[in-house]
View 1: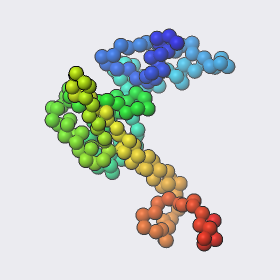
View 2: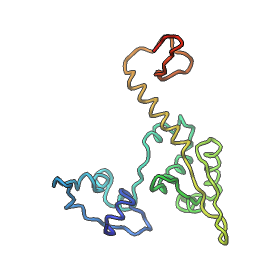
View 3: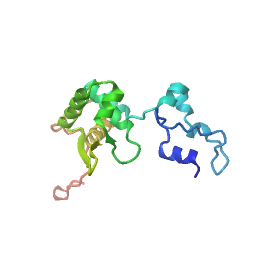
View 4: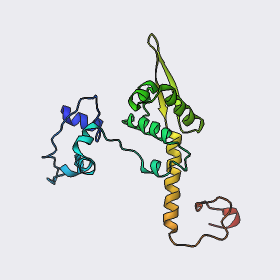
Amino acid sequence: MGACQAARHRHPTRYYVGAPYVKCSTRNLTEANGRDVSDETSDNRWEQRLSPLIVKGGVLPAPSVLLRHAGELNLTPQELVLCLYILDKKWGADWPYVSMLQAADELGRHKNKVYAWKQSLIRKGYLVATPRTVPGIGRRADYCDLSSLFSALERLVLAEAVEQARGDLPLPLYEIGTLSTVSTAQYPSRGIA
């Protein structure tokens, strides 16, 4: 695997300011059957939606549901920005190590403000920040886990799907409490399947 392919494998749609930019030619990309897939695998779609220069500066894939429901999640605009910043550092399945000092610097905000946003996300239960200390070096970037936020986002996506599936159906008259999904459990003791 060449350097170009390795960079694409690690960071398929990201370019970062301050990191080496790897220009990969996608003109001759073909599948095994010979079909040209350059438009499907390249960053052209981002360049068309934004601009080539903006794409070179960096593109952040973020969940749309996070933006649509930030108010419902009780996220302030500043907390939303910090969540997006953390997601920008997430390059794989693992959660990233994020320096709040670096975040403050890159976001152009005072470190105390960024620490306050972090603490607020922790209090709301959306962020688990695990401190990291390296022997002989000292305090390093925190491990920032947004799994609880992602759990809330998944619940919102499911709720949207239920609402969409209901369509124009009238609201149920006998809905119990806050039950919002249909149970598929079997009840053999009552003879109900």
